[in-house]
Image (tube, rainbow, N blue to C red; front, top):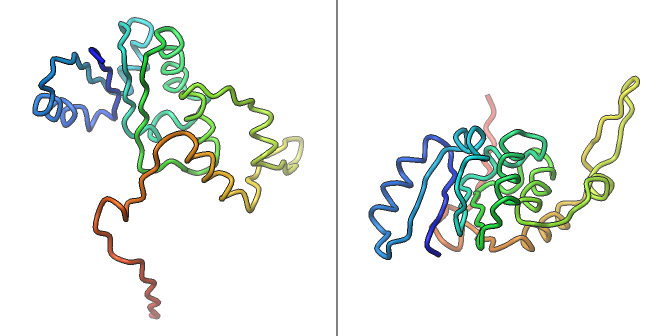
Length: 169
């Protein structure tokens, strides 16, 4: 890969630039931009052979957001050879985040099928409010694993065992 676009939260742009300067010894061209810059300039950005989206859950987990739509448009327009999405939080408030990641990765998932699989509607006045179905966690974990490499924190770092402490006041 000769050129890479890195999209990250604004607070991590300088860290990415430092690490690239430190480790890039093969002449790969990197551009590091914030998700806000992507949203503003997606149609003007040149094509890159690879795209890395860091902390994807922070701005790309909602398939209705302008940032998500800008990235999806960029990916469709330039069709990079490689796309990596990075997150320590693949599942946020609902399964819609996982749905969004799949769309970015080229899955042809249908909105209605996803909604039917993971949600049921509750009527509140004139509106139908989707509520997550219980018991879908294992199925969702299988889907997340099918999207790419999933690394358990315990496998790469020393982590203190979970311990519940009950305190009364």
